[in-house]
Length: 159
Image (cartoon, rainbow, N blue to C red; front, side, top):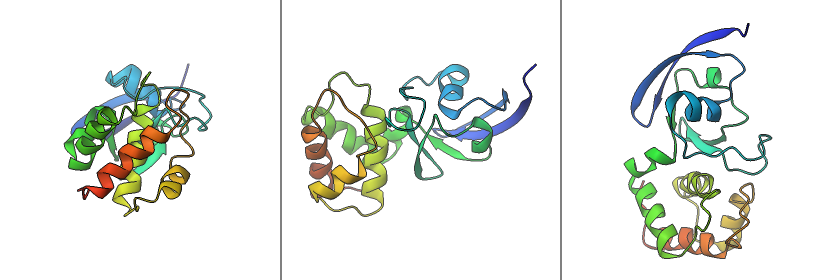
Protein backbone atom coordinates (compact mmCIF):
# COMPACT_ATOMS: atom_id res chain seq x y z
CA UNK A 1 0.00 0.00 0.00
CA UNK A 2 1.30 3.41 -0.97
CA UNK A 3 2.18 5.84 1.78
CA UNK A 4 0.06 9.00 1.68
CA UNK A 5 0.46 12.48 3.08
CA UNK A 6 -2.05 15.25 3.70
CA UNK A 7 -1.34 18.42 1.77
CA UNK A 8 -2.90 21.85 1.47
CA UNK A 9 -2.09 24.24 -1.34
CA UNK A 10 -3.72 27.14 -3.12
CA UNK A 11 -4.38 26.38 -6.78
CA UNK A 12 -5.53 29.28 -8.94
CA UNK A 13 -6.76 31.06 -5.82
CA UNK A 14 -8.67 28.08 -4.39
CA UNK A 15 -7.47 26.18 -1.31
CA UNK A 16 -7.14 22.47 -2.02
CA UNK A 17 -6.75 19.87 0.72
CA UNK A 18 -6.03 16.27 -0.16
CA UNK A 19 -4.36 13.09 0.97
CA UNK A 20 -2.03 12.00 -1.81
CA UNK A 21 0.40 9.16 -2.39
CA UNK A 22 3.83 10.62 -1.62
CA UNK A 23 5.19 9.71 -5.06
CA UNK A 24 2.47 11.51 -7.03
CA UNK A 25 3.96 14.26 -9.14
CA UNK A 26 2.35 17.68 -9.11
CA UNK A 27 1.03 17.66 -12.68
CA UNK A 28 -0.66 14.27 -12.18
CA UNK A 29 -2.18 15.50 -8.91
CA UNK A 30 -3.55 18.60 -10.65
CA UNK A 31 -4.91 16.62 -13.59
CA UNK A 32 -6.23 13.52 -11.81
CA UNK A 33 -7.26 14.80 -8.38
CA UNK A 34 -8.10 18.46 -8.97
CA UNK A 35 -9.45 18.11 -12.52
CA UNK A 36 -7.22 20.78 -14.05
CA UNK A 37 -6.15 19.15 -17.30
CA UNK A 38 -4.64 22.18 -19.04
CA UNK A 39 -1.06 21.35 -18.03
CA UNK A 40 0.08 18.45 -20.14
CA UNK A 41 2.25 15.44 -19.43
CA UNK A 42 4.78 14.93 -22.17
CA UNK A 43 8.16 13.35 -21.53
CA UNK A 44 7.83 12.91 -17.73
CA UNK A 45 11.53 13.79 -17.49
CA UNK A 46 11.38 17.60 -17.32
CA UNK A 47 12.73 18.00 -20.83
CA UNK A 48 9.74 18.97 -23.00
CA UNK A 49 8.21 21.73 -20.85
CA UNK A 50 4.59 20.69 -21.49
CA UNK A 51 3.94 20.42 -17.75
CA UNK A 52 5.40 23.81 -16.84
CA UNK A 53 3.35 25.74 -14.31
CA UNK A 54 3.96 28.33 -11.62
CA UNK A 55 4.68 27.48 -7.99
CA UNK A 56 5.20 30.42 -5.65
CA UNK A 57 5.95 32.68 -8.61
CA UNK A 58 8.52 30.40 -10.24
CA UNK A 59 8.01 28.33 -13.38
CA UNK A 60 8.59 24.66 -12.53
CA UNK A 61 8.24 21.35 -14.30
CA UNK A 62 5.15 19.74 -12.80
CA UNK A 63 6.38 16.26 -13.70
CA UNK A 64 9.55 16.70 -11.63
CA UNK A 65 7.94 18.16 -8.53
CA UNK A 66 6.01 15.95 -6.16
CA UNK A 67 2.60 17.12 -4.99
CA UNK A 68 3.82 16.83 -1.38
CA UNK A 69 6.64 19.27 -2.21
CA UNK A 70 3.99 21.85 -3.17
CA UNK A 71 2.37 21.62 0.28
CA UNK A 72 1.74 25.18 1.49
CA UNK A 73 2.45 26.68 -1.92
CA UNK A 74 0.59 28.93 -4.33
CA UNK A 75 0.18 27.13 -7.67
CA UNK A 76 -0.97 28.70 -10.91
CA UNK A 77 -1.91 26.51 -13.86
CA UNK A 78 -2.92 27.58 -17.35
CA UNK A 79 -6.51 27.68 -16.09
CA UNK A 80 -5.50 30.43 -13.66
CA UNK A 81 -3.08 32.61 -15.64
CA UNK A 82 -5.84 34.98 -16.71
CA UNK A 83 -6.00 36.25 -13.13
CA UNK A 84 -2.85 38.22 -14.02
CA UNK A 85 -2.97 40.95 -16.63
CA UNK A 86 0.22 39.62 -18.22
CA UNK A 87 -1.40 36.18 -18.49
CA UNK A 88 -4.39 37.63 -20.31
CA UNK A 89 -2.11 39.68 -22.54
CA UNK A 90 -0.08 36.59 -23.48
CA UNK A 91 -3.15 34.48 -24.15
CA UNK A 92 -4.50 37.18 -26.47
CA UNK A 93 -1.11 37.61 -28.18
CA UNK A 94 -0.76 33.85 -28.74
CA UNK A 95 -4.07 33.92 -30.60
CA UNK A 96 -3.27 37.11 -32.54
CA UNK A 97 0.14 35.80 -33.65
CA UNK A 98 -1.03 32.24 -34.34
CA UNK A 99 1.42 31.06 -31.69
CA UNK A 100 -0.58 27.95 -30.94
CA UNK A 101 -1.55 25.22 -33.27
CA UNK A 102 -2.09 21.83 -31.66
CA UNK A 103 -1.97 23.54 -28.25
CA UNK A 104 -0.01 20.83 -26.46
CA UNK A 105 2.95 23.08 -25.61
CA UNK A 106 0.90 26.24 -25.09
CA UNK A 107 0.33 26.01 -21.30
CA UNK A 108 4.05 25.53 -20.67
CA UNK A 109 5.02 28.21 -23.18
CA UNK A 110 2.69 30.72 -21.53
CA UNK A 111 3.92 29.85 -18.01
CA UNK A 112 7.55 30.24 -19.11
CA UNK A 113 6.74 33.48 -20.96
CA UNK A 114 5.04 34.95 -17.89
CA UNK A 115 8.13 34.16 -15.85
CA UNK A 116 10.37 35.81 -18.48
CA UNK A 117 8.26 38.96 -18.60
CA UNK A 118 7.86 39.19 -14.81
CA UNK A 119 11.64 38.92 -14.43
CA UNK A 120 11.95 42.05 -16.58
CA UNK A 121 12.91 40.25 -19.79
CA UNK A 122 13.53 42.49 -22.78
CA UNK A 123 12.00 42.09 -26.23
CA UNK A 124 15.29 40.54 -27.32
CA UNK A 125 14.37 37.64 -29.59
CA UNK A 126 17.52 35.66 -28.78
CA UNK A 127 16.96 36.04 -25.03
CA UNK A 128 13.32 34.98 -25.36
CA UNK A 129 14.32 31.94 -27.42
CA UNK A 130 16.92 31.05 -24.79
CA UNK A 131 14.39 31.36 -21.97
CA UNK A 132 11.85 29.22 -23.85
CA UNK A 133 14.44 26.68 -25.03
CA UNK A 134 13.24 24.14 -22.45
CA UNK A 135 9.77 24.09 -24.01
CA UNK A 136 9.38 21.97 -27.13
CA UNK A 137 6.96 22.85 -29.89
CA UNK A 138 6.54 20.68 -32.96
CA UNK A 139 4.01 22.86 -34.79
CA UNK A 140 4.89 26.55 -34.83
CA UNK A 141 8.62 26.75 -35.44
CA UNK A 142 8.75 29.12 -32.44
CA UNK A 143 8.76 32.32 -34.53
CA UNK A 144 5.11 33.08 -33.81
CA UNK A 145 5.60 32.32 -30.11
CA UNK A 146 8.52 34.74 -29.92
CA UNK A 147 6.46 37.31 -31.86
CA UNK A 148 3.68 36.99 -29.29
CA UNK A 149 6.04 37.47 -26.33
CA UNK A 150 7.75 40.44 -28.02
CA UNK A 151 4.39 42.07 -28.73
CA UNK A 152 3.35 41.83 -25.07
CA UNK A 153 6.65 43.27 -23.88
CA UNK A 154 6.61 46.05 -26.49
CA UNK A 155 3.07 47.03 -25.49
CA UNK A 156 4.25 47.43 -21.90
CA UNK A 157 3.32 44.14 -20.27
CA UNK A 158 1.85 44.52 -16.82
CA UNK A 159 2.13 41.94 -14.06
